[in-house]
Length: 424
Ligand SMILES: *Cc1c(COP(=O)(O)O)cnc(C)c1O
Image 1: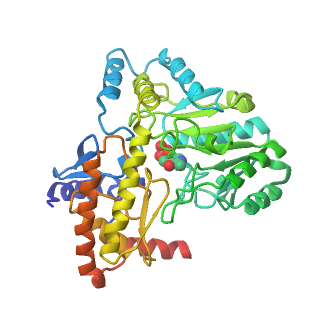
Image 2: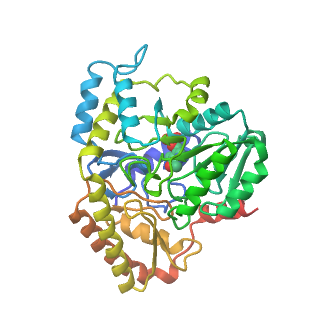
Image 3: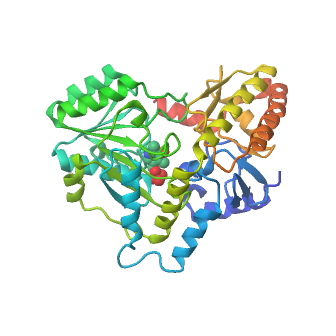
């Protein structure tokens, strides 16, 4: 595949952007051949700067729920754009959107809109502390809640003081959670939980009902707020709160990424149990109340309620998981497929330094399938059975090619450096 334009852009970027790129969309921790820049997208597909097309199993790292450039969502956004977007005050859509989310998400009595997931998780933390007058916030070890100083996974430029009252527990481990709550004494403001364990580099874990219930009970007993970080998994597991199926309701939930199908908006939803605290913090941003993303969100949420987008994604996810297991086995590979099928994590057995996973991602990319070797992926509603079957056929070839070069595979140098830096 031609990479001339991508390489030229990377060289220019190095001059004017630190390291040429930053954050989660940097390809620094992906195989060499992965393109950095993309020129367009449609439905389930993306095109890189050189015009190569890929079936995209990253969905923009979450925002594409229905597929890129969904006509219904984009028409709603464009209609609002003709009226106005960022104004001196919010448009009437703000009230309608808050009403819609309060209707759809069981625990929610109110909504506060913002722009990124980090805005929503940070506001959740501040609201919980304001509501309770307490300081300690418990987060699951290794869980991602955003890139602010209190939660960024790479602490360069932050102070120990920034997370002085952030403490960890082990996800799904009731004893560990209880111990952390005991340790917090009468200073516990909140417990954060993800809908399921979707940390990078490891097998995904569904939440155990006993863990979810314990989190709720421990919060009730200590007057702390239970916060679910729905930024990644929200509306991909259910048409409302992800833990409703477990019978557990949080006080606060943070949402982002997909509920406007790629248009920039996030939201903190809360129960009356935290209305006063949320109302007392100063939270705002120049673009937080823009009307265009709100129009896109209203239309996306309508489609969420009225279509079978979720069942469709689950059906395709099951087809993908079974198909990949079958062809991997035929070539002597054992996959570790974890997480909900519509948010799959795909890694390899006996692959501690990810060399097989990286090799496979390279082989898939060269066959027009964009898959990630260590981050959970996403299916979108624009994918079809034919897309999944094409993926399985490509995987069949990719495993054959990988088996042929298995002995020559080497671990990714940056990943090795990072792992050793983290171990020290
Ligand atoms: C992406 C993500 C965030 C942060 O959202 P941004 O929009 O990148 O700020 C927070 N929590 C989870 C679980 C996420 O996946």
